[in-house]
Length: 397
Figure 1 (cartoon, rainbow, N blue to C red):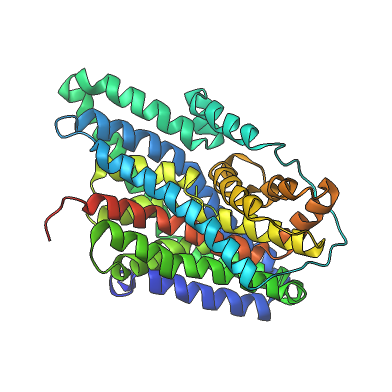
Figure 2: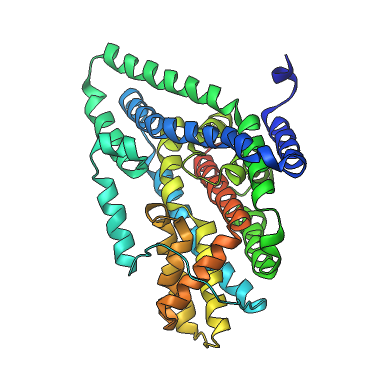
């Protein structure tokens, strides 16, 4: 069978090429073909919350003899914080080196948070959400909370019950494997629809801003992340960084959803030999709080707005921007329209009027076909990179 001869990634690349050609040659049927992509993303989003809940619950209930290595989990979370903060700093330096301005003329719809505290409050309330509602709404923090609590509670359950939990987790994982096999077809539909409906015309006027965003994200992925991994593992970081970009970043690039990419990351973490007790917890958390790409987007667009209005950014405000961007990015998944609607929050540091900052958000939506794809690819692939780095601490070889 061809599936055994051709790997998933090459088949995805074939889907990308065929989707682009179909979008150019048959734009009239792009909307119908785009349904394939929408169905693929919907299937991933549907199974991901259940997968997180049963996998974490089973892992904790059945592996209590060895348990989750708390030091490695804490190290992973610290790497998430470090990476997101470093991304904001890199965005600041790149924006200073290549300052951008924006032609502002339109507004955008949406309600951004009024302060960082509202973002953090949203995260806290998601942690204590009703478990049924968490599953229905795709609230991964709520799913994770209940999975951990139930897993701890089931540690003393009879062995037969705990085996049934593992059987349930294996069953859901098998469903995920079947869903992922449809990735080439789904990505074919996503690319076809994007090429036919958006093309590159909408990006021409804002090409310089898009190039800066993408360049900063690539710098983070290919230079800063490897440095962080090397500092932790003392080994050549590029094999793992490039493999995560290939197997996680490509699917995240086209689905543009960290939540939808959780099953992909869990499967990749298992292939890499990462401890299940570790990745079952850190991958879902990373999809919610590890947002280096979002920190870059927030910082670059806020500084572009300041440059456009001729506002001088003081060193103190620059430092504050990095902190706010990192904190805001960690809560981006809880805000409609993700990182873009957190831009007004950063703009408020420079006294930029709300109406103007929402125009910047509108520009972000125009280039989002590029910005959001690279942002999600960076965010999602980094979840596995940092989890792998933390898992290697203390291992021989």
